[in-house]
Image (cartoon, rainbow, N blue to C red; front, side, top):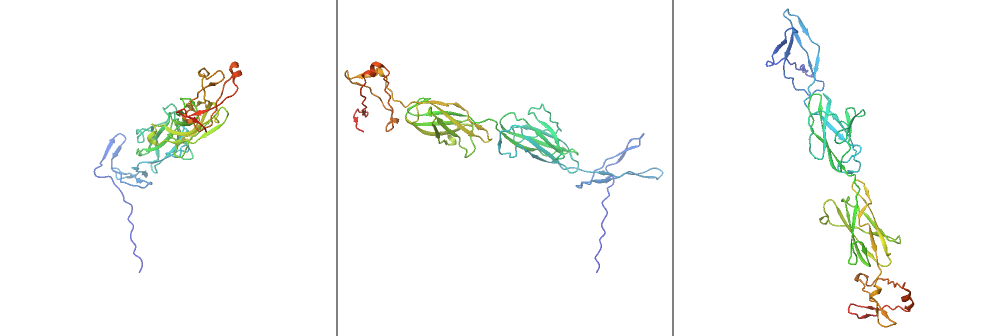
Length: 365
């Protein structure tokens, strides 16, 4: 049997509502006004509007067709940064570029509103703005033809920290979008270090034979797995690399990070002024080499006894007692006899070294 044909109904026709009412607004120009509710439509093509008028003589007039488009939905935005692509990463560049553009299929984008602060959630006012060069964060706004309705803002961020760019847009129908946010983490400062020495046989800047603990304090934490480099160089241009270990977070204070290394000083290290060198790379890629405190220290492994304390056992024998630090026990030792005094030099024939323990028992070894 042939298929049944179903008549397709014509599109709906809307007339003036009963509540709207037509009223004359100007008799001289025969201007009329009619207020009605436009039916909801999601079609971008809109609604066709036409006015038909019949005069007292029965003549009918028809207006040209007018398309009415209804845009009740908020626009959508896109934000990106070609210079700061990752919102979780840190950057040393404090002049980011942000590209933003809106999407409103029916009425288009009429303008943008934004603010720039350190608050993760903030909303700019519903005012279309024009960004001027003299604003607080020294920004500028320019169109990007390749994106069409897009814009690009370049900011000079005033200080190191996490900053947020907040943006909303208004479409041609007056609808405002929700607020969109973009996070910028800025760190333009290189890390610097302070060094302290800890040894039982040392002062703040002078060390002798034995174990030496070195404390390194960095001005900021480093990324996980990133260990600073530290070494010192003696007066003999000998370089001693140090193996740094980071202290637990509970032992670190504030934004600093703390590291320790242990080395050993002996007579072969080289007496004289030694200098520390360090290098560290922070989370933004800044490389720091500056040591603000404790860069230089003195190495002195010589065991001394003042000549004025020499005791003459007889006319031919004189003795000097030296106290050896615990850290120098079982290590190579260097003893210097200064015989610059001509009278003393002429009298010295033999030098005998004898060792005793704390109870003055002579040591045969």
